[in-house]
Length: 127
Image 1 (tube, rainbow, N blue to C red):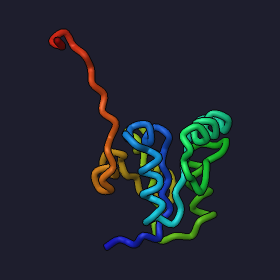
Image 2 (image 1 turned 90 degrees about the horizontal axis):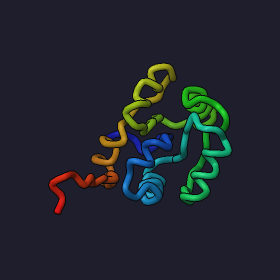
Image 3 (image 1 turned 30 degrees about the horizontal axis):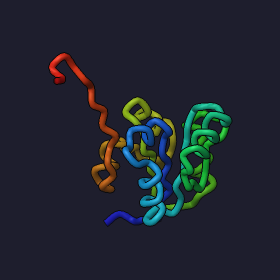
Image 4 (image 1 turned 45 degrees about the horizontal axis):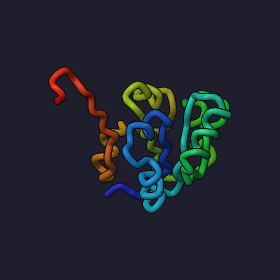
């Protein structure tokens, strides 16, 4: 069984794909040592979105790339594992960062029993 001594970083895009992102954050905090957000958006935008959503994070990435943020977190938090939960378009990020593992938000949601946001489209066959 994998250790729960881990640092878990969500991308903002991954959080947007969850039906209840705040609840996922709270759940992750019960089994991960450190939980937070990394984003390539400006600090102002990132902090505003986190504040509005009331995410209980241990860290934010600040004004840097996701790769730089993950490297910095690796140097700041000493845990056995480092997991980046991201959207599909961020899957290549961890290839450039030592010790981090990528987990798609879909796979993470399945493993942790988090619900994904569903969108319904109304096509021509809608009554």
